[in-house]
Length: 329
Image (cartoon, rainbow, N blue to C red):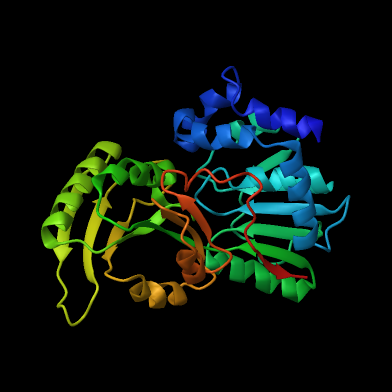
């Protein structure tokens, strides 16, 4: 456990060779990842012990000495790190395959004793040499490996696509820098990246000012954007709520990522108007970022498994934050 704590502390070490490998291997400078790694470097012994206990409950069939294959088919480069920590805590062996868009040297600088390879995209049968396969990827990838696991009567754990929302109960421009911070990391492609902004009731004039400020902030935050379009699609009062859209196109924010898609801004008058939205994505909302994240009514609305977090901190979860996987035993 002490060696794990030492490793986590090293994530914030200014002399680490890993810092210089983030940009060439992952397409993003260490400075972009530093808030996340700084948070992880502060993980305590008590947090690790609680994490181990939670993992044992989540994966009751795993045991010391098991051999697992981690497949990181997601386009976010840091997904293997919590799984590697989990493997160390529970004492099983782990091999890692990652998306071909990510270089391996950065991973090897962090974990020189582990085996890393690029993802084999042509699995037609379950990899027989492993006790379990753990996959982070699209729903299609999850379904593919789930079918292989069931055919082979093998264990499989999968984390499919989830989405997150940002929420501002008022159209105060002071919250825009925090929102942009959450959007910037991973180019808006992570499951903790806000895919839509829920904006509390605002007059037409307030909304126009807010969107103009947000537009300016996006232009400054995404310098590689070739074109930035802003438009407001008005709905009739009989068909609330109103929508506006901000779209950033042709943005290659980190290597291998698809361009940042449209950020949909959903203007609502009452919290109850959002009920159908969260019902539609039940079990799929990873996080809700808010400028006032303490209201119990929001917890009731989004459900127990959604992480409610202050804006500006959506992309820096604690290392021990657990998502519920799809399990095939």
